[in-house]
Image (cartoon, one colour):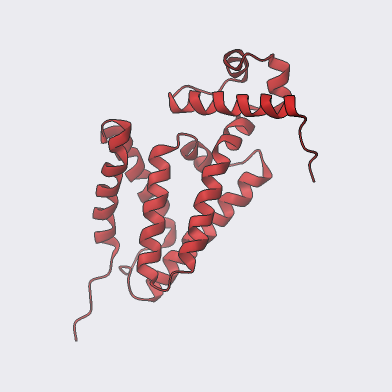
Length: 192
């Protein structure tokens, strides 16, 4: 169990995370010295909270990962396997095009924070369970595997980011691309 931060330390932590979020949203790299300067804090203060840029990046991504995990668990409760998978994929692609911290954290081969590893493993597990359930129900085209979803979703997010126009238009673009992908994933109805 971690000890709660003092009020001033908690304010500094919040300020560091907010500055990091703003830098990521601008497409800037996270450099702890730069974060410290922009937050109006000493470099030592930033390093006391976050030993590496990766730890800060993962901290910024944690709320998004937690929300996606909760969405996935909620989707597992849906009795319609296709609707559950589809809804989860829409929420995932929305997160990918609106949260600049998600893609680099999701793509990292190793994690700095144990919480990040836990959340990523849960997301993989939930995504696989949703996909497998839809496939077993006959809703997914044969020959596809759950592992195929990750590169396909990354491709949609990348395309929506590059070709989606203004940031506010990216969700609509991502939805359009995902709808097309889902039409290709869905098994053709069986006729008697």
